[in-house]
Length: 416
Image 1: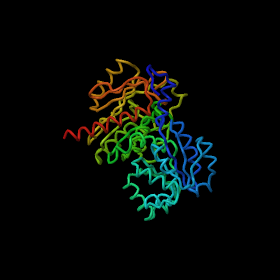
Image 2 (image 1 turned 180 degrees about the horizontal axis):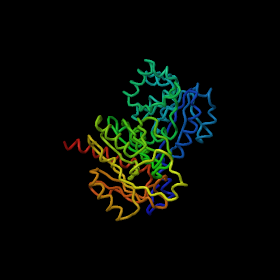
Image 3 (image 1 turned 90 degrees about the vertical axis):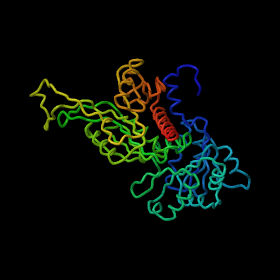
Image 4 (image 1 turned 120 degrees about the horizontal axis):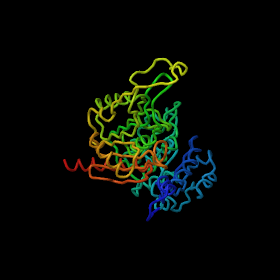
């Protein structure tokens, strides 16, 4: 969608939720009990703007009728090899192939070139044409721990296949959560694995400061911004640690998480982890409480005894200032109650104070943006000046700041 005017909130939402617009995705499905989830994946990829065609193994059709995928995509699935050139035609058509779920049988056949199914033949043809193939394993963990799985995995990765790990739960290597999987497919198709080998630290969510055991000082942060950054980084190959407080969204399944409560807890966690590890990128997207009570009561304060209550507050530590070993690229966030040039002036001052490479300032009083919403009314600034400003989707911001971070790190390498 190309607009020659300022887009509406609805149009921005469409732009943000359709990152796969006009991308042609070939969805391969195999005979796993989790195959039913691929119906929802196909529908989600279409809602993200993708054009989806399905290739099924013969055994997959015993679990789900091809008619259901026909309903989901509007395209008849491909199953049998007819002796014609379906694999060539599909390879020419597709931008990328996603095999989800992928059984060990299918992974091994692709790895060793056993091309007795249209799906495996097409996957190998895609690799031969230099196109992206993404594999999403789903199986019992006993199979996943087998030497055969490890060998197949090593060969696939060596050949350039991107493997999105399963969610390990209940002794099973399960189909990933749809939010995480669809985001990863988008990130790999549009960005690749450009963060492989990098370590990324992210903070997210709201901290809590207790007045007494039942009353707290906090804020309405949902944690969405930090979760999107952590997921984007992990999908693009980074090793991610997410330090988070209260969140109304689930953390990505594929990142290491450290759960904290207070701002001091978050500052301590940052201090400890940056003492023991050196990160390439750190994104401070959390919303720590800036004040805490000077003293906390150990029992509930009685409203009968205290019809009026005066609470004395003191500042909490600045989490970003508790870094020990400085990451190569630091991103700060600043929530303000002003916009425009006033917001720009405030975040310029904070960027200098925090010694960050980039800062995202946002006006939380904006009607369509802020805490708990999908957008920020933001100004994004780095040391070269304003990168962008206006109403921006958090999904878009997550990608933008990581694009900027990896680009800067690469240029610094070239300069040294």
